Length: 342
Image (cartoon, rainbow, N blue to C red; front, side, top):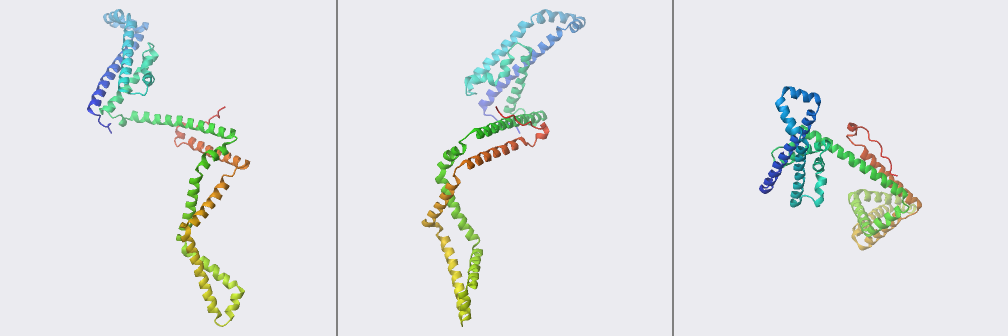
C-alpha cells in the first residue's frame, strides 16, 4: 500500500530532496566507477591491452584523467563535503533533529564518505537507500511489496529482537545480583511500596470481602438454607428432650413445629446478616478483618525476608527463560546463556 499522499508544500519540498539525492547518487556512482576503472587502468596487463586496442583513447585518458586523478577525486570530495554541509543546514532550518549536532551522527555514512579513502567511499552507496525512502514518501514506489525489502525487514527485526533480548537478560541478571546483595530489600518494598498504599489496600480488601459474602449468599441461597435446616433437623433428632417430647401425646406435632420455627429463624438470621452487610457495623467489622490480614501479611522476620528474595529471584529467572525461549531460536541457533556481570 503506498504512503499517504503528502501536502502540496511538503510534496514539493520532498521532490527537491529527491532530485538532489538522485544527483548525489549519480555522482557517487561516477566517482566509484572512476576509482574502480582507474585502479584497473594502473594494472600493467590491462594498461597494455587498452594501449593496443584503443591507443588514442588510452593516450587521452592517461594524459587528462589518470595523470590528474587526485585533483579530479578531490573535486568529487569537495562536492560531497558541500552535500554534507548543505544537508546539515537544511536539517537545521527544517528542525529535523532535536539538537543541531545530531545530523553528522544520523548521516555518518555521508561524513565518512567524504574521507578520500576507497574503503570509506563505498559507504556513500547507502544514499541509494535514502533515495528509495524519499521515493516511497512521494508514493512513486512501494518497497513493501519487494521480495528484497521483505527479506531485509525480516532479518532487521530478528536482529532487533536478538539485541533487545540480550539487553533484557543482562538487566535481569544484574537485578538478581542486586537482590542477593541487598540486605534491606524486603523492608524497603514494604515501607516504600506496600505501606504507603495501606488505606487503598484495606478498602479493596473490605470491599472484596463484602462482595464475596453477598455474591456467595445470593448464588447459593437455597443450598445454604437447606444445609442450615438439615443441621437443625439433625440436632433436634439427636436431642434427648425432643425425643422425650415426641412420646407425649401431640408432642410429635409440637416437635415438628419447633423444628420448622427454628429453621425459619435461622434463615431469617442469615438473610438479616446479609442485608446488614451494607450497614456501618459490618463495614467496621470488615475493615478490622482486613487490617488484621494486612498486618499479618506485612509482618517481617528473617525467614520472610529470605523467602521474598528467593521468590523475586525465581520470578526473574522464569522471565529470563521466557525471553531466551524464542519461537525463532531454531532459525538462528541456540542462544548461549549470558555471563553474569562482575
